[in-house]
Amino acid sequence: MIEPEHAGRLGVSARFERDDTRGVELACAGLQSLGIRHVRLPLEAGMLSGTADRAWFAWLVARIASGADVLPSICLDGMQDVTGTLEALFGACDGVLDGVEFSGSDDALGVACTLTRTLGLNTVLAVEAAAASARLAVLGEAGLLSDVTAIGLGCTQHDGLLLRPACDDAAHVLAGYNADAAIWVTGPGVHAEPHQHARLAQAFLDMLGLAAERVYWPTLISGIGERARGVATGLHASSGQPSLFGRLLEGGVTNLDQIMALTRGEASGSGGARPVLITGGAGFIGANLADRLAADGHRVLIYDALARPGVERNLRWLARRHAARISFELGDLRDERALSDAAAEAEAVFHLAGQVAVTTSMVAPLDDFEVNARGTLALLDALRTRNPRAGLVFASTNKVYGDLADIELVRDGDCYLPTSPSVRSHGVGEQRPLCFHTPYGCSKGAADQYVLDYAHSFGLRTAVLRMSCIYGERQLGTEDQGWVAHFLLRAIAGEPVTIYGDGRQVRDVLHVGDAVSAYVAAWQNIDSISGRAYNLGGGTANAISLLQLISHIEDLLGRRVDVTFDDWRPGDQRYFVADTSAVQRDLSLPQALGWRPGIARLAAHFGAVPVHSEAAQ
Image (cartoon, rainbow, N blue to C red; front, side, top):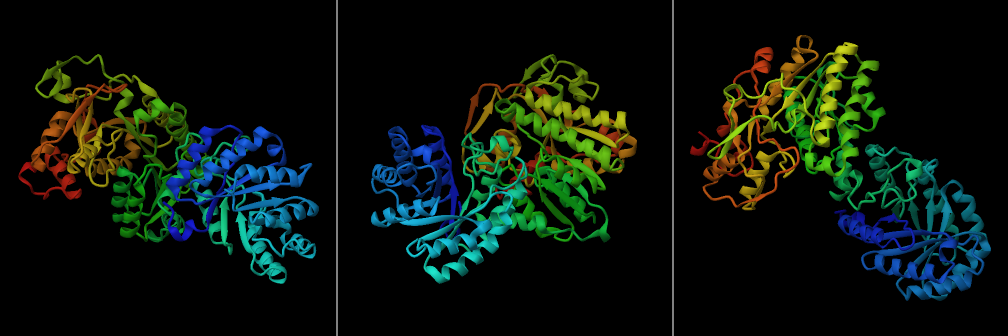
Protein backbone atom coordinates (compact mmCIF):
# COMPACT_ATOMS: atom_id res chain seq x y z
CA MET A 1 0.00 0.00 0.00
CA ILE A 2 1.37 3.39 -1.00
CA GLU A 3 2.04 5.67 1.96
CA PRO A 4 -0.49 8.47 2.58
CA GLU A 5 2.07 11.20 1.93
CA HIS A 6 2.60 9.84 -1.60
CA ALA A 7 -0.98 8.74 -2.26
CA GLY A 8 -2.09 12.38 -2.13
CA ARG A 9 0.16 13.21 -5.11
CA LEU A 10 0.22 9.99 -7.07
CA GLY A 11 -2.20 9.11 -9.83
CA VAL A 12 -2.24 6.80 -12.82
CA SER A 13 -3.51 6.99 -16.39
CA ALA A 14 -5.86 4.22 -17.45
CA ARG A 15 -7.26 3.40 -20.89
CA PHE A 16 -10.19 1.09 -21.49
CA GLU A 17 -11.87 -0.32 -24.56
CA ARG A 18 -15.60 0.32 -24.73
CA ASP A 19 -17.67 -2.22 -22.75
CA ASP A 20 -14.58 -3.75 -21.13
CA THR A 21 -16.28 -4.08 -17.77
CA ARG A 22 -13.94 -6.87 -16.67
CA GLY A 23 -10.92 -4.67 -17.31
CA VAL A 24 -12.50 -1.86 -15.29
CA GLU A 25 -13.22 -4.14 -12.35
CA LEU A 26 -9.66 -5.47 -12.39
CA ALA A 27 -8.37 -1.90 -12.52
CA CYS A 28 -10.50 -0.85 -9.56
CA ALA A 29 -9.20 -3.79 -7.53
CA GLY A 30 -5.64 -2.82 -8.46
CA LEU A 31 -6.17 0.80 -7.48
CA GLN A 32 -7.53 -0.29 -4.12
CA SER A 33 -4.64 -2.66 -3.41
CA LEU A 34 -2.09 0.05 -4.21
CA GLY A 35 -3.94 2.88 -2.50
CA ILE A 36 -3.99 5.12 -5.60
CA ARG A 37 -6.69 7.79 -5.40
CA HIS A 38 -6.31 9.74 -8.66
CA VAL A 39 -7.13 8.33 -12.11
CA ARG A 40 -6.67 10.07 -15.45
CA LEU A 41 -8.81 8.79 -18.36
CA PRO A 42 -7.38 9.80 -21.77
CA LEU A 43 -10.16 10.15 -24.38
CA GLU A 44 -10.32 11.05 -28.06
CA ALA A 45 -13.20 13.06 -29.51
CA GLY A 46 -14.44 10.07 -31.50
CA MET A 47 -14.90 8.06 -28.32
CA LEU A 48 -17.67 10.44 -27.19
CA SER A 49 -19.69 10.90 -30.36
CA GLY A 50 -22.60 8.50 -29.87
CA THR A 51 -25.24 7.88 -27.24
CA ALA A 52 -23.83 4.42 -26.47
CA ASP A 53 -20.33 5.90 -26.10
CA ARG A 54 -21.56 8.44 -23.59
CA ALA A 55 -23.50 5.83 -21.63
CA TRP A 56 -20.39 3.67 -21.42
CA PHE A 57 -18.29 6.65 -20.36
CA ALA A 58 -20.82 7.62 -17.70
CA TRP A 59 -20.74 4.10 -16.25
CA LEU A 60 -16.93 4.03 -16.41
CA VAL A 61 -16.55 7.34 -14.59
CA ALA A 62 -19.08 6.41 -11.93
CA ARG A 63 -17.43 3.05 -11.29
CA ILE A 64 -13.91 4.45 -10.91
CA ALA A 65 -15.16 7.46 -8.94
CA SER A 66 -16.48 5.08 -6.28
CA GLY A 67 -12.89 4.68 -5.10
CA ALA A 68 -10.82 7.45 -6.73
CA ASP A 69 -10.92 10.95 -8.16
CA VAL A 70 -11.44 10.85 -11.94
CA LEU A 71 -9.84 13.26 -14.39
CA PRO A 72 -11.02 12.70 -17.98
CA SER A 73 -8.40 13.99 -20.43
CA ILE A 74 -10.26 15.02 -23.57
CA CYS A 75 -8.69 15.95 -26.89
CA LEU A 76 -11.03 18.52 -28.46
CA ASP A 77 -9.50 18.37 -31.94
CA GLY A 78 -12.01 16.93 -34.37
CA MET A 79 -14.97 17.51 -32.06
CA GLN A 80 -17.70 19.05 -34.25
CA ASP A 81 -19.89 20.51 -31.50
CA VAL A 82 -17.72 21.17 -28.48
CA THR A 83 -20.44 22.71 -26.30
CA GLY A 84 -23.13 20.19 -27.16
CA THR A 85 -20.87 17.17 -26.79
CA LEU A 86 -19.42 18.28 -23.47
CA GLU A 87 -22.82 19.25 -22.05
CA ALA A 88 -24.20 15.84 -22.93
CA LEU A 89 -21.11 14.17 -21.54
CA PHE A 90 -21.09 16.07 -18.25
CA GLY A 91 -24.82 15.63 -17.89
CA ALA A 92 -24.45 11.88 -18.27
CA CYS A 93 -21.86 11.86 -15.53
CA ASP A 94 -24.41 13.46 -13.20
CA GLY A 95 -22.06 15.47 -11.01
CA VAL A 96 -19.49 12.72 -10.45
CA LEU A 97 -16.65 14.66 -12.06
CA ASP A 98 -14.76 17.36 -10.22
CA GLY A 99 -12.41 18.26 -13.05
CA VAL A 100 -11.50 17.76 -16.71
CA GLU A 101 -8.24 18.06 -18.63
CA PHE A 102 -8.44 19.50 -22.14
CA SER A 103 -6.09 19.71 -25.10
CA GLY A 104 -6.70 21.19 -28.55
CA SER A 105 -6.87 24.48 -30.41
CA ASP A 106 -7.18 27.78 -28.57
CA ASP A 107 -10.74 28.36 -29.80
CA ALA A 108 -11.92 24.95 -28.66
CA LEU A 109 -10.14 25.38 -25.33
CA GLY A 110 -11.86 28.71 -24.78
CA VAL A 111 -15.29 27.14 -25.28
CA ALA A 112 -14.47 24.18 -23.04
CA CYS A 113 -13.02 26.34 -20.26
CA THR A 114 -16.07 28.61 -20.23
CA LEU A 115 -18.36 25.61 -19.95
CA THR A 116 -16.43 23.92 -17.15
CA ARG A 117 -16.34 27.17 -15.16
CA THR A 118 -20.11 27.53 -15.63
CA LEU A 119 -20.63 23.99 -14.33
CA GLY A 120 -18.28 24.53 -11.40
CA LEU A 121 -15.71 21.99 -12.59
CA ASN A 122 -11.98 22.30 -12.14
CA THR A 123 -10.16 22.91 -15.41
CA VAL A 124 -6.78 21.49 -16.38
CA LEU A 125 -5.05 22.41 -19.64
CA ALA A 126 -2.74 19.80 -21.16
CA VAL A 127 0.59 21.11 -22.46
CA GLU A 128 3.47 19.22 -24.06
CA ALA A 129 6.61 19.49 -21.95
CA ALA A 130 8.80 19.97 -25.02
CA ALA A 131 7.21 23.37 -25.71
CA ALA A 132 5.81 24.24 -22.30
CA SER A 133 7.20 27.74 -21.96
CA ALA A 134 6.14 28.97 -25.40
CA ARG A 135 2.73 27.27 -25.33
CA LEU A 136 1.88 28.60 -21.88
CA ALA A 137 2.83 32.12 -22.93
CA VAL A 138 0.39 31.85 -25.87
CA LEU A 139 -2.37 30.53 -23.61
CA GLY A 140 -1.67 33.27 -21.10
CA GLU A 141 -1.91 36.04 -23.74
CA ALA A 142 -5.19 34.50 -24.91
CA GLY A 143 -6.57 34.78 -21.37
CA LEU A 144 -6.95 31.01 -20.99
CA LEU A 145 -4.77 30.66 -17.89
CA SER A 146 -6.54 33.06 -15.59
CA ASP A 147 -9.05 30.59 -14.15
CA VAL A 148 -7.47 27.16 -14.68
CA THR A 149 -6.99 24.85 -11.75
CA ALA A 150 -3.80 23.29 -13.06
CA ILE A 151 -1.52 22.80 -16.02
CA GLY A 152 -1.07 19.20 -17.08
CA LEU A 153 2.45 18.66 -18.42
CA GLY A 154 2.91 15.55 -20.53
CA CYS A 155 5.58 14.12 -22.77
CA THR A 156 6.45 11.18 -24.96
CA GLN A 157 8.95 8.46 -24.06
CA HIS A 158 11.57 10.30 -26.10
CA ASP A 159 11.52 13.56 -24.16
CA GLY A 160 10.93 12.41 -20.59
CA LEU A 161 14.08 14.24 -19.49
CA LEU A 162 12.33 17.50 -20.34
CA LEU A 163 9.82 17.13 -17.52
CA ARG A 164 12.04 18.61 -14.84
CA PRO A 165 12.97 21.81 -16.71
CA ALA A 166 9.39 22.00 -18.05
CA CYS A 167 8.08 22.14 -14.47
CA ASP A 168 10.42 25.04 -13.75
CA ASP A 169 9.41 26.84 -16.96
CA ALA A 170 5.71 26.32 -16.26
CA ALA A 171 6.02 27.74 -12.74
CA HIS A 172 7.84 30.79 -14.12
CA VAL A 173 5.17 31.51 -16.77
CA LEU A 174 2.24 30.84 -14.45
CA ALA A 175 3.61 33.35 -11.97
CA GLY A 176 2.69 36.08 -14.48
CA TYR A 177 -0.80 34.85 -15.32
CA ASN A 178 -2.16 32.65 -12.53
CA ALA A 179 0.16 32.03 -9.61
CA ASP A 180 -2.45 29.86 -7.91
CA ALA A 181 -2.54 27.29 -10.72
CA ALA A 182 -1.02 23.93 -9.85
CA ILE A 183 1.34 21.88 -11.99
CA TRP A 184 0.32 18.29 -12.70
CA VAL A 185 2.52 15.90 -14.64
CA THR A 186 1.74 12.84 -16.72
CA GLY A 187 4.87 10.70 -16.91
CA PRO A 188 6.34 9.57 -20.21
CA GLY A 189 5.71 6.24 -21.89
CA VAL A 190 8.93 4.76 -20.51
CA HIS A 191 11.14 3.20 -23.18
CA ALA A 192 11.58 -0.25 -21.65
CA GLU A 193 11.37 -3.84 -22.73
CA PRO A 194 8.86 -6.02 -20.85
CA HIS A 195 11.27 -7.20 -18.16
CA GLN A 196 13.38 -4.10 -17.52
CA HIS A 197 12.00 -3.64 -14.04
CA ALA A 198 14.83 -1.46 -12.77
CA ARG A 199 14.31 1.07 -15.58
CA LEU A 200 10.62 1.35 -14.77
CA ALA A 201 11.19 1.64 -11.03
CA GLN A 202 13.79 4.37 -11.42
CA ALA A 203 11.62 6.30 -13.88
CA PHE A 204 8.77 6.12 -11.38
CA LEU A 205 10.90 7.46 -8.53
CA ASP A 206 12.31 10.19 -10.76
CA MET A 207 8.78 11.26 -11.63
CA LEU A 208 7.83 11.50 -7.96
CA GLY A 209 10.85 13.75 -7.47
CA LEU A 210 9.45 16.41 -9.82
CA ALA A 211 8.27 19.78 -8.49
CA ALA A 212 4.62 19.03 -9.24
CA GLU A 213 1.55 18.91 -7.01
CA ARG A 214 0.32 15.75 -8.72
CA VAL A 215 1.98 13.11 -10.91
CA TYR A 216 0.26 10.49 -13.06
CA TRP A 217 2.09 7.28 -13.99
CA PRO A 218 1.33 6.62 -17.69
CA THR A 219 -0.11 3.10 -17.48
CA LEU A 220 -2.28 1.18 -15.05
CA ILE A 221 -2.80 -2.07 -16.97
CA SER A 222 -0.10 -3.44 -19.28
CA GLY A 223 -1.21 -4.58 -22.70
CA ILE A 224 -3.66 -1.82 -23.60
CA GLY A 225 -1.89 0.29 -26.19
CA GLU A 226 1.47 -1.30 -25.32
CA ARG A 227 1.47 -4.64 -27.10
CA ALA A 228 2.65 -3.30 -30.45
CA ARG A 229 5.55 -1.41 -28.83
CA GLY A 230 6.75 -4.43 -26.84
CA VAL A 231 6.71 -2.62 -23.49
CA ALA A 232 5.01 -3.40 -20.20
CA THR A 233 4.95 -0.32 -18.00
CA GLY A 234 1.68 -1.05 -16.24
CA LEU A 235 1.30 -1.52 -12.51
CA HIS A 236 -0.96 -4.48 -13.28
CA ALA A 237 -0.97 -7.12 -15.99
CA SER A 238 -4.05 -7.65 -18.14
CA SER A 239 -4.76 -10.74 -16.02
CA GLY A 240 -5.43 -8.46 -13.07
CA GLN A 241 -2.36 -9.64 -11.15
CA PRO A 242 0.20 -7.02 -10.14
CA SER A 243 3.16 -6.72 -12.45
CA LEU A 244 6.49 -7.17 -10.72
CA PHE A 245 6.85 -3.39 -10.72
CA GLY A 246 3.39 -3.06 -9.21
CA ARG A 247 4.06 -5.72 -6.59
CA LEU A 248 7.19 -3.95 -5.43
CA LEU A 249 5.17 -0.75 -5.22
CA GLU A 250 2.54 -2.49 -3.07
CA GLY A 251 5.16 -2.37 -0.31
CA GLY A 252 5.10 1.42 -0.59
CA VAL A 253 7.20 4.05 -2.31
CA THR A 254 9.71 3.86 0.53
CA ASN A 255 10.15 0.13 -0.09
CA LEU A 256 10.74 0.75 -3.79
CA ASP A 257 13.19 3.54 -3.06
CA GLN A 258 15.15 1.36 -0.65
CA ILE A 259 15.40 -1.42 -3.23
CA MET A 260 16.62 0.97 -5.90
CA ALA A 261 19.09 2.48 -3.43
CA LEU A 262 20.63 -0.98 -3.13
CA THR A 263 21.01 -1.17 -6.90
CA ARG A 264 22.92 2.11 -6.79
CA GLY A 265 25.35 0.69 -4.24
CA GLU A 266 28.62 -0.80 -5.37
CA ALA A 267 30.48 -3.48 -3.44
CA SER A 268 33.97 -2.29 -2.67
CA GLY A 269 35.61 -5.16 -0.80
CA SER A 270 38.32 -7.57 -1.96
CA GLY A 271 40.48 -4.96 -3.59
CA GLY A 272 38.43 -4.54 -6.75
CA ALA A 273 38.28 -8.27 -7.59
CA ARG A 274 35.61 -9.38 -9.99
CA PRO A 275 32.34 -10.31 -8.26
CA VAL A 276 30.79 -13.72 -7.93
CA LEU A 277 27.42 -13.52 -9.68
CA ILE A 278 24.44 -15.21 -8.02
CA THR A 279 21.28 -15.19 -10.09
CA GLY A 280 18.37 -15.49 -7.69
CA GLY A 281 20.69 -14.32 -4.94
CA ALA A 282 17.88 -12.76 -2.89
CA GLY A 283 16.09 -16.10 -2.64
CA PHE A 284 16.39 -18.72 0.06
CA ILE A 285 19.46 -20.65 -1.09
CA GLY A 286 20.93 -17.65 -2.91
CA ALA A 287 20.87 -15.42 0.18
CA ASN A 288 22.55 -18.08 2.31
CA LEU A 289 25.15 -18.64 -0.40
CA ALA A 290 25.78 -14.90 -0.75
CA ASP A 291 26.20 -14.65 3.03
CA ARG A 292 28.81 -17.44 3.00
CA LEU A 293 30.76 -16.02 0.07
CA ALA A 294 30.77 -12.47 1.43
CA ALA A 295 31.88 -13.73 4.83
CA ASP A 296 34.75 -15.50 3.06
CA GLY A 297 35.85 -12.18 1.54
CA HIS A 298 34.36 -12.39 -1.95
CA ARG A 299 32.57 -9.59 -3.73
CA VAL A 300 29.06 -10.75 -4.59
CA LEU A 301 26.70 -9.41 -7.26
CA ILE A 302 23.10 -10.46 -6.68
CA TYR A 303 21.00 -10.50 -9.84
CA ASP A 304 17.36 -10.98 -8.89
CA ALA A 305 13.96 -9.88 -10.15
CA LEU A 306 12.50 -10.06 -6.60
CA ALA A 307 9.52 -11.86 -8.13
CA ARG A 308 8.89 -13.91 -5.00
CA PRO A 309 7.11 -11.82 -2.35
CA GLY A 310 9.20 -11.32 0.75
CA VAL A 311 12.69 -11.86 -0.65
CA GLU A 312 13.37 -8.15 -0.26
CA ARG A 313 13.90 -8.97 3.42
CA ASN A 314 16.75 -11.30 2.50
CA LEU A 315 18.30 -8.56 0.40
CA ARG A 316 18.19 -6.06 3.25
CA TRP A 317 19.61 -8.67 5.62
CA LEU A 318 22.58 -9.18 3.30
CA ALA A 319 23.08 -5.45 2.90
CA ARG A 320 23.20 -4.98 6.67
CA ARG A 321 25.70 -7.81 7.16
CA HIS A 322 27.97 -7.20 4.18
CA ALA A 323 27.46 -3.66 2.91
CA ALA A 324 30.99 -3.45 1.52
CA ARG A 325 30.85 -6.73 -0.39
CA ILE A 326 27.25 -7.09 -1.64
CA SER A 327 25.90 -5.29 -4.69
CA PHE A 328 22.51 -5.81 -6.27
CA GLU A 329 20.92 -5.56 -9.68
CA LEU A 330 17.15 -5.69 -10.09
CA GLY A 331 17.21 -7.93 -13.14
CA ASP A 332 15.12 -10.57 -14.89
CA LEU A 333 16.49 -13.63 -16.70
CA ARG A 334 14.42 -12.52 -19.70
CA ASP A 335 16.29 -9.21 -19.90
CA GLU A 336 19.10 -10.69 -21.95
CA ARG A 337 21.18 -7.53 -22.24
CA ALA A 338 21.29 -6.89 -18.50
CA LEU A 339 21.94 -10.58 -17.82
CA SER A 340 24.78 -10.65 -20.34
CA ASP A 341 26.40 -7.54 -18.85
CA ALA A 342 26.27 -9.05 -15.36
CA ALA A 343 27.78 -12.33 -16.55
CA ALA A 344 30.55 -10.63 -18.51
CA GLU A 345 32.23 -9.27 -15.38
CA ALA A 346 31.78 -12.30 -13.11
CA GLU A 347 34.54 -14.36 -11.58
CA ALA A 348 32.07 -17.24 -11.30
CA VAL A 349 28.32 -17.77 -11.64
CA PHE A 350 25.89 -19.58 -9.39
CA HIS A 351 22.70 -19.86 -11.39
CA LEU A 352 19.85 -20.24 -8.90
CA ALA A 353 17.20 -17.95 -10.42
CA GLY A 354 14.16 -19.51 -12.00
CA GLN A 355 10.48 -20.26 -11.93
CA VAL A 356 10.33 -22.78 -9.09
CA ALA A 357 6.81 -24.22 -8.89
CA VAL A 358 5.26 -27.11 -10.80
CA THR A 359 1.83 -25.60 -10.19
CA THR A 360 2.80 -22.28 -11.77
CA SER A 361 4.22 -24.07 -14.80
CA MET A 362 0.86 -25.76 -15.34
CA VAL A 363 -0.88 -22.38 -15.44
CA ALA A 364 1.73 -20.43 -17.45
CA PRO A 365 3.95 -22.89 -19.32
CA LEU A 366 5.30 -20.30 -21.77
CA ASP A 367 6.48 -18.04 -18.96
CA ASP A 368 7.98 -21.07 -17.25
CA PHE A 369 9.93 -21.91 -20.42
CA GLU A 370 11.08 -18.32 -20.98
CA VAL A 371 12.49 -18.04 -17.49
CA ASN A 372 13.95 -21.49 -16.91
CA ALA A 373 15.03 -22.73 -20.33
CA ARG A 374 15.57 -19.63 -22.44
CA GLY A 375 16.93 -17.61 -19.52
CA THR A 376 19.52 -20.29 -18.76
CA LEU A 377 20.52 -20.56 -22.41
CA ALA A 378 20.93 -16.77 -22.60
CA LEU A 379 23.20 -16.85 -19.56
CA LEU A 380 25.30 -19.68 -20.98
CA ASP A 381 25.70 -17.94 -24.30
CA ALA A 382 26.71 -14.73 -22.58
CA LEU A 383 29.49 -16.65 -20.86
CA ARG A 384 30.47 -18.36 -24.12
CA THR A 385 30.86 -15.09 -25.98
CA ARG A 386 32.00 -12.71 -23.24
CA ASN A 387 33.46 -14.60 -20.28
CA PRO A 388 34.27 -18.23 -21.14
CA ARG A 389 36.61 -18.84 -18.19
CA ALA A 390 34.03 -18.14 -15.52
CA GLY A 391 32.79 -21.33 -13.89
CA LEU A 392 29.04 -21.89 -13.58
CA VAL A 393 27.16 -24.09 -11.11
CA PHE A 394 23.50 -24.62 -11.94
CA ALA A 395 20.67 -25.40 -9.51
CA SER A 396 18.69 -28.17 -11.17
CA THR A 397 16.02 -30.39 -9.66
CA ASN A 398 15.12 -34.01 -9.04
CA LYS A 399 12.07 -33.36 -11.24
CA VAL A 400 14.28 -34.06 -14.28
CA TYR A 401 13.78 -37.76 -13.43
CA GLY A 402 10.01 -37.53 -13.87
CA ASP A 403 7.48 -39.08 -11.52
CA LEU A 404 9.56 -42.29 -11.05
CA ALA A 405 6.41 -44.35 -11.48
CA ASP A 406 8.44 -47.41 -12.47
CA ILE A 407 10.07 -47.67 -9.03
CA GLU A 408 8.01 -50.30 -7.25
CA LEU A 409 6.99 -49.20 -3.77
CA VAL A 410 5.39 -50.69 -0.69
CA ARG A 411 3.63 -48.92 2.14
CA ASP A 412 5.56 -49.13 5.39
CA GLY A 413 3.65 -47.33 8.12
CA ASP A 414 3.63 -43.60 7.33
CA CYS A 415 5.87 -43.82 4.26
CA TYR A 416 6.50 -45.49 0.93
CA LEU A 417 9.68 -47.50 0.48
CA PRO A 418 11.20 -49.07 -2.65
CA THR A 419 11.08 -52.82 -3.01
CA SER A 420 14.53 -52.67 -4.64
CA PRO A 421 17.17 -53.23 -1.91
CA SER A 422 19.66 -51.09 -3.86
CA VAL A 423 17.36 -48.07 -4.19
CA ARG A 424 16.22 -48.46 -0.59
CA SER A 425 19.83 -48.53 0.64
CA HIS A 426 21.37 -45.87 -1.59
CA GLY A 427 18.62 -43.80 -3.22
CA VAL A 428 18.28 -42.64 -6.84
CA GLY A 429 21.58 -42.17 -8.63
CA GLU A 430 22.68 -39.97 -11.52
CA GLN A 431 22.60 -42.93 -13.91
CA ARG A 432 18.82 -42.80 -13.69
CA PRO A 433 17.40 -41.92 -17.19
CA LEU A 434 15.97 -38.43 -17.51
CA CYS A 435 12.20 -38.35 -17.95
CA PHE A 436 10.77 -34.85 -18.02
CA HIS A 437 7.22 -34.51 -16.72
CA THR A 438 5.17 -31.30 -16.37
CA PRO A 439 6.24 -28.04 -18.02
CA TYR A 440 8.45 -27.32 -15.02
CA GLY A 441 10.28 -30.60 -15.42
CA CYS A 442 10.73 -29.88 -19.14
CA SER A 443 12.04 -26.35 -18.66
CA LYS A 444 14.44 -27.26 -15.86
CA GLY A 445 15.48 -30.42 -17.67
CA ALA A 446 16.23 -28.50 -20.85
CA ALA A 447 18.27 -25.99 -18.86
CA ASP A 448 20.08 -28.85 -17.10
CA GLN A 449 21.08 -30.39 -20.42
CA TYR A 450 22.15 -27.08 -21.96
CA VAL A 451 24.44 -26.45 -18.99
CA LEU A 452 26.11 -29.83 -19.48
CA ASP A 453 26.30 -29.49 -23.25
CA TYR A 454 27.97 -26.08 -23.11
CA ALA A 455 30.78 -27.81 -21.22
CA HIS A 456 31.00 -30.55 -23.84
CA SER A 457 30.45 -28.43 -26.98
CA PHE A 458 32.15 -25.16 -26.05
CA GLY A 459 34.48 -26.03 -23.22
CA LEU A 460 32.70 -23.94 -20.57
CA ARG A 461 33.41 -24.89 -16.97
CA THR A 462 29.93 -25.88 -15.84
CA ALA A 463 28.37 -28.36 -13.42
CA VAL A 464 24.83 -29.24 -12.34
CA LEU A 465 23.45 -29.99 -8.89
CA ARG A 466 20.07 -31.75 -9.07
CA MET A 467 18.56 -30.83 -5.77
CA SER A 468 16.16 -32.72 -3.61
CA CYS A 469 14.44 -30.82 -0.76
CA ILE A 470 16.51 -28.02 0.76
CA TYR A 471 15.25 -26.38 3.94
CA GLY A 472 16.53 -23.94 6.51
CA GLU A 473 16.80 -20.38 7.71
CA ARG A 474 15.49 -17.58 5.49
CA GLN A 475 13.17 -19.93 3.61
CA LEU A 476 9.81 -18.40 2.66
CA GLY A 477 7.90 -21.65 2.43
CA THR A 478 4.67 -21.73 0.44
CA GLU A 479 2.28 -24.42 -0.64
CA ASP A 480 3.99 -24.54 -4.03
CA GLN A 481 7.63 -24.54 -2.95
CA GLY A 482 9.57 -25.02 0.29
CA TRP A 483 7.23 -27.53 1.93
CA VAL A 484 9.28 -28.07 5.11
CA ALA A 485 9.18 -24.39 6.04
CA HIS A 486 5.59 -24.10 4.83
CA PHE A 487 4.38 -26.92 7.09
CA LEU A 488 6.28 -25.48 10.03
CA LEU A 489 5.06 -21.92 9.53
CA ARG A 490 1.44 -23.02 9.19
CA ALA A 491 1.69 -25.18 12.29
CA ILE A 492 3.30 -22.40 14.33
CA ALA A 493 0.48 -20.06 13.30
CA GLY A 494 -2.14 -22.65 14.27
CA GLU A 495 -3.34 -22.89 10.67
CA PRO A 496 -4.26 -26.12 8.85
CA VAL A 497 -1.77 -27.85 6.55
CA THR A 498 -2.97 -29.28 3.24
CA ILE A 499 -1.21 -32.40 1.99
CA TYR A 500 -1.61 -33.31 -1.68
CA GLY A 501 -1.75 -37.07 -1.86
CA ASP A 502 -1.76 -39.33 1.18
CA GLY A 503 1.32 -37.90 2.91
CA ARG A 504 3.36 -41.07 2.64
CA GLN A 505 5.50 -39.67 -0.16
CA VAL A 506 9.16 -39.63 0.89
CA ARG A 507 11.86 -37.03 0.27
CA ASP A 508 15.38 -36.60 1.52
CA VAL A 509 15.84 -33.20 3.15
CA LEU A 510 19.08 -31.24 3.32
CA HIS A 511 19.81 -28.24 5.50
CA VAL A 512 20.69 -25.13 3.54
CA GLY A 513 24.09 -24.83 5.24
CA ASP A 514 25.08 -28.17 3.77
CA ALA A 515 23.67 -27.21 0.37
CA VAL A 516 25.73 -24.01 0.40
CA SER A 517 28.85 -26.01 1.24
CA ALA A 518 28.18 -28.21 -1.77
CA TYR A 519 27.80 -25.21 -4.10
CA VAL A 520 31.02 -23.65 -2.86
CA ALA A 521 32.86 -26.96 -3.19
CA ALA A 522 31.50 -27.41 -6.72
CA TRP A 523 32.97 -24.03 -7.68
CA GLN A 524 36.29 -24.82 -6.03
CA ASN A 525 36.45 -28.12 -7.96
CA ILE A 526 34.90 -26.89 -11.19
CA ASP A 527 37.77 -28.00 -13.41
CA SER A 528 37.59 -31.60 -12.23
CA ILE A 529 33.77 -31.88 -12.31
CA SER A 530 33.00 -29.78 -15.40
CA GLY A 531 30.30 -31.34 -17.53
CA ARG A 532 28.99 -33.47 -14.65
CA ALA A 533 25.61 -33.55 -12.92
CA TYR A 534 25.22 -34.63 -9.30
CA ASN A 535 22.23 -35.44 -7.13
CA LEU A 536 22.25 -33.27 -4.02
CA GLY A 537 20.07 -34.04 -1.02
CA GLY A 538 20.07 -35.39 2.48
CA GLY A 539 20.43 -38.99 1.32
CA THR A 540 18.91 -42.04 2.95
CA ALA A 541 19.90 -40.85 6.44
CA ASN A 542 17.64 -37.82 6.04
CA ALA A 543 14.69 -39.38 4.23
CA ILE A 544 11.26 -38.63 5.71
CA SER A 545 7.66 -38.68 4.60
CA LEU A 546 5.31 -35.74 4.85
CA LEU A 547 3.38 -37.50 7.61
CA GLN A 548 6.59 -38.10 9.54
CA LEU A 549 7.44 -34.41 9.31
CA ILE A 550 3.99 -33.48 10.62
CA SER A 551 4.45 -35.86 13.55
CA HIS A 552 7.84 -34.36 14.35
CA ILE A 553 6.46 -30.81 14.20
CA GLU A 554 3.75 -31.88 16.66
CA ASP A 555 6.45 -33.14 19.00
CA LEU A 556 8.40 -29.88 18.66
CA LEU A 557 5.39 -27.66 19.29
CA GLY A 558 3.67 -29.88 21.82
CA ARG A 559 0.31 -29.74 20.06
CA ARG A 560 -1.62 -31.32 17.23
CA VAL A 561 -1.40 -29.98 13.68
CA ASP A 562 -4.64 -29.73 11.72
CA VAL A 563 -4.07 -31.64 8.46
CA THR A 564 -6.35 -31.89 5.41
CA PHE A 565 -5.79 -33.93 2.26
CA ASP A 566 -6.33 -33.18 -1.41
CA ASP A 567 -5.67 -34.89 -4.76
CA TRP A 568 -2.16 -35.74 -5.91
CA ARG A 569 -0.57 -33.00 -8.00
CA PRO A 570 0.82 -33.57 -11.53
CA GLY A 571 4.28 -35.13 -11.62
CA ASP A 572 4.43 -35.67 -7.85
CA GLN A 573 6.92 -38.39 -6.97
CA ARG A 574 5.84 -40.96 -4.39
CA TYR A 575 9.50 -41.49 -3.53
CA PHE A 576 12.66 -39.59 -4.19
CA VAL A 577 15.80 -39.97 -2.14
CA ALA A 578 19.07 -38.85 -3.70
CA ASP A 579 22.02 -41.18 -3.89
CA THR A 580 24.62 -38.67 -2.66
CA SER A 581 27.65 -40.94 -2.80
CA ALA A 582 29.05 -39.32 -5.97
CA VAL A 583 28.72 -35.72 -4.81
CA GLN A 584 30.15 -36.55 -1.38
CA ARG A 585 33.09 -38.39 -2.93
CA ASP A 586 33.99 -35.89 -5.65
CA LEU A 587 33.49 -32.76 -3.52
CA SER A 588 34.69 -34.20 -0.19
CA LEU A 589 31.55 -33.05 1.57
CA PRO A 590 31.19 -33.53 5.33
CA GLN A 591 28.34 -35.50 6.84
CA ALA A 592 25.06 -33.60 6.50
CA LEU A 593 23.20 -32.20 9.48
CA GLY A 594 20.53 -34.63 10.68
CA TRP A 595 16.97 -33.70 9.83
CA ARG A 596 15.71 -33.64 13.44
CA PRO A 597 18.19 -31.04 14.78
CA GLY A 598 17.97 -29.20 11.46
CA ILE A 599 14.21 -28.77 11.63
CA ALA A 600 14.42 -27.83 15.29
CA ARG A 601 16.94 -25.16 14.30
CA LEU A 602 14.48 -23.86 11.69
CA ALA A 603 11.66 -23.84 14.25
CA ALA A 604 13.88 -21.81 16.57
CA HIS A 605 14.67 -19.43 13.71
CA PHE A 606 10.91 -18.90 13.35
CA GLY A 607 10.73 -18.22 17.09
CA ALA A 608 8.71 -21.34 17.91
CA VAL A 609 10.94 -23.51 20.14
CA PRO A 610 14.34 -23.38 21.85
CA VAL A 611 17.01 -24.75 19.58
CA HIS A 612 18.03 -27.38 22.16
CA SER A 613 14.53 -28.77 22.75
CA GLU A 614 14.24 -32.46 23.58
CA ALA A 615 12.43 -33.19 20.30
CA ALA A 616 15.43 -31.90 18.35
CA GLN A 617 17.62 -34.76 19.48
